[in-house]
Image 1: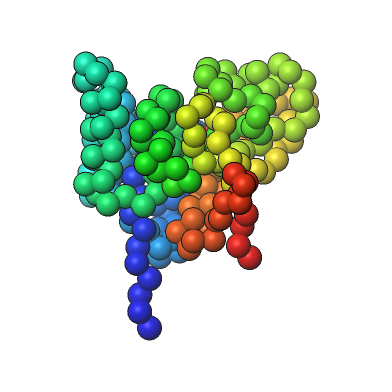
Image 2: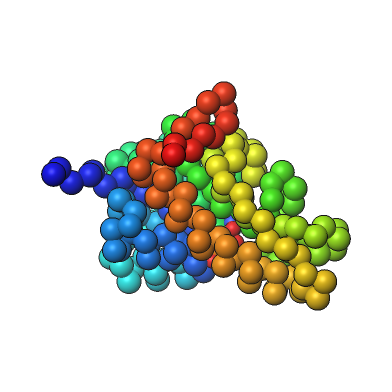
Length: 211
Ligand code: GRF
């Protein structure tokens, strides 16, 4: 039997990289038919680069500040991803807005994970502990995780998967973040696997999962 071709993944991340690790854990034993081609960050040396280095994955620091013109920045990123022949881009803790030429080039092939139930608690500024504090402060009883395709706006693209997490009366932002993160680590690899098996389709801008 012919072996399935491995999809090539580029990961954009700026922090500790636990979601990146969760995906790698499923790639290593062959549960996800993919390889991580590179990790890109707007930070010079984020912790996620150490995880990549441990696995022999190339890392790139690419910041808007390195370019005088916005189009040169976007063009560089598109060229970089094309040089790796990337099929799928993952945003795993990446806070910068993706330049629109890159969104256009990888439309429906760029996926973000967000630690709340979009469209609530999304958009610029809703990240990290601030987000979970806002969730607790609002009094909602349910939060969760959203995995979605990336479009030109923060946290706005077509939803691929959502899973709920109960907000408990004695939750702190930290305890809630911890339970949400556990769900993230389960569902992100699940979506990546489905994408790599060509099981995620788009119809009128909505995501349809192939059974
Ligand atoms: C996660 O909560 C993710 O949902 C959000 O940023 C955080 C990244 O955490 N977009 P990590 O770097 O994957 O540990």
